[in-house]
Length: 454
Image 1 (cartoon, one colour):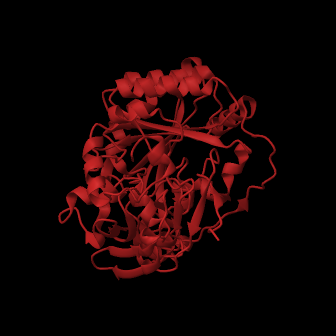
Image 2 (cartoon, rainbow, N blue to C red):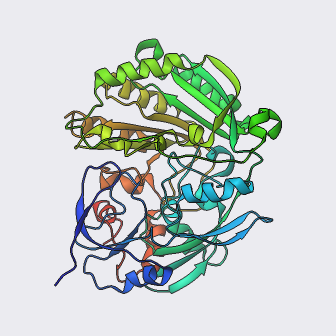
């Protein structure tokens, strides 16, 4: 009797597909997933926070890594941790912050596994200072069809290591990784806030001042029009020193306590995200922010992960789900960035989760997303507006013309013919992948959709 299949979707809930789900409980079982026969191949899956389909495999096998979780080496002197692939960033923060250490990079959610962070080469609010997740990976253990189980480093196996960094899980199954940590003296952030009247002011502030901050992010109002196009709330900061804390806070300067305040109910028959509701929300959100505030203390959750405070927040978009579109363009493409923001604003697409950040130089990963310059990300409801696809296609074309790219971990609808222009080292990645998996045992819906695999 064949194994039962389960429907799997990305965080956007737009295109579920059925797969046989394996639930290994240790690294040996996880490594053995490659030995399971399947004409449609196998891919690893963590907590399912990729928006699109990289952790789906229609008709094939999906190895769920979350049962393979934990730390098996921690060097507090050197600031190194070795964690298994299914360990979440949330778990790492809970374990490490009370010991005076923080993860090197965190995306906008803590609900990402170590393996997923490598496969997507996740970035955060500090890319302009430290790069992305894989820049802090000292070594990783991976199992590939050609090489079996092996530990690799950027020096020992550069082709495989960097093809795996942002390789969407298509070079092998990651078993564990050794990660370089960031030392902290408190668990609070000292944050400076500026409310800007338009996009040019936002860009000027970030260009002139981001170098003085460890972390920087701008929430951008993509529904504002006229002279207010691109108005933003810019938050920049660093971990606070103990001297900045109150007497009460100094009693436990490294304390970290966080959890979901609520779970969004699975009740919305339609999306609650409409032009009217988002325009009203954006106006209130913008007006309530201080025009200028300095040295305001925020918790890790408040600064890095506000959406994690509402579990299953993606349900607000209703049964059709959402699309996230995230681009990166070079530093000299500010005119292209302005055009993109103006096009989105003129379209009236309802987006309240829109952020702008600066990227530092990219790394050696052929499919790693960050390139030096600007990155803009936005969420919009899926399926509600027939003009949305045409708008995003126009934006894609402008990104390509500017020498930029889209983030594959967020994508669910990119035209495959644009991939090589966005990622000019694609042939280099394919060569490394073919060497690791000559028979094509690793597969995913994203890999087939974009032609990454044969």
